[in-house]
Image (tube, rainbow, N blue to C red):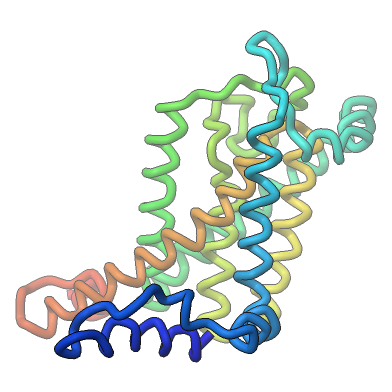
Length: 255
């Protein structure tokens, strides 16, 4: 890939006067370059093939009729789990309670990092994430699946209404897990990741979220953690320039 990039740059620097374009970049590629890219950069190659594959799927797929239930592959995979939970209300309640405990663990960790350790990045990330989730969830209110299995002990507790898109359960867990990895709390991060997977399976089994809600939840956790990091950097630079109060400074929180 480096050879291809270098040749691409040369196409723009070796023209007339040193600044013109001599010829198209791909005309300078050799079979050796192609083999090198396929061998050492197989991940982007794999996704390039994925683009072509799913273009074919998208343009030939039969659309779901307007009056039909949405198709969700996660619901198909967890169909047997849904039947088990529907026939065992006590088991459904137990799993819901355990899931609520996990949500409490996420929340406690995220708030702890700010209040006790003076590191607000995870808390800022969660604020960004839940605000964005509220905006998107209200903007597009998806229908509740027909086989939804609710529970009074599930979070949010009390069988209240909630936004389907996207999963705050999954995104919050990702935010906590990413912070744990930054702090080298690797075993705790792995535990949270395992619980997050189990949580996702349960949410699909109870029809509490569509698959897309969970997938976007993972991406949202990563995105807003990154944005919170950029916010910290920006505010740290402002503080260094003497522009006043900074949320990032532990001392400024206490004084």
